[in-house]
Length: 480
Image (tube, rainbow, N blue to C red; front, top):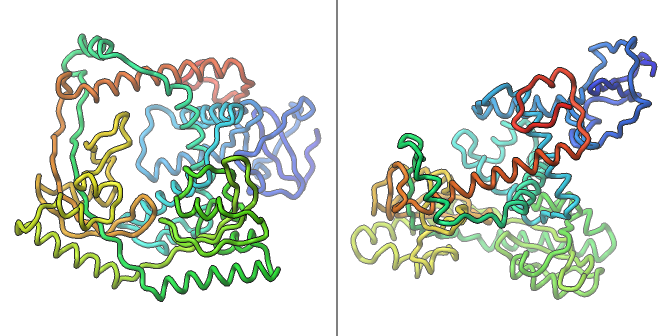
């Protein structure tokens, strides 16, 4: 194949592709590239370095891994202070390749991630960034990332979706793994004392929240805006999907014209589900619906049995500083009454707290990130704002009011009580059996995942640029 001037080239592990008039941004990192013998470059051909916009360094199945992908991962890791146990130029391409194996298998097994799951994850990530002291606002986040909020959400959407697909695929492979008490005891019986794992500091936390009141004027503004959208659709001025793309504050579905895909009742907010499942005419738009996420209008796309596919437009009312301050002042008064002994923190949560997940549990937060539900949290598993407050508190102390973003993406104000703290210590079979069982279970699952990847590598087409073939990889079989 002859390389002509004026063409842009992409180097492929021994292969050159040419594209007239294309630039680097035209090639998406996850775009499939079809390979054929007709694309092999002749040894005598020379490619000017100035004409190379990117390079395919690995091919796994029909999925390429671009050098730019590795460079971006490396820069992100360095920005976050990550340290690699080896050469990142070898480690990172392999990590991307393994992810592609899981994504390929997830597609074969029809593993799915709903837009609702993606949107919640994206919102949590953005809220976490905004909560960081060096950020503090959406505007600062846009400035820091040098992107608009819409661009940030779009970038996060596909990344979060892929990570969730990989996680679900892995869970499918190891979901049935169980270990017996005898296996746990046998594993730790002969471990040297200095090899027995350290159990990090854990805490139990009680929380009492108040949701700042949204002014009626703001609610009316949101509802009127949604009614105006409905009116424009009904008059035929524009389509529901167009309005969703332009104005919906649900970033994942907004990109799809507001479409959520087929979902059962249990996958949706109850009030949203009630409205969605009552729709029968795809030409009609629902009345304004309030959910835990904000205010919506909904349009039916299709129904299949007990699942519905609909479009929606979400608008979230703004919380004023005055409302936040009012909620904090009320919580401050409650905290003072608790400290004065007028009532207990536990009793106050039952009557005053807005947090549905904890108010009937005396305010005690439950950790669902562990293999078994527990009231004990490692500091890293707590919401960022709660961990920051708890870090310097004493047992039985009640905090001052603070502001946080809850799991639904809403601004709430809270006070917390540190119920207990267990300092870091070496694990014992009597006191930390569950933690030790988790360690053995994780090791078993890691071995199953490792064996699956090795087998998958043997069964799939792999092509690696020669300069990577001397790398020390975690999984054997890449180099053939």
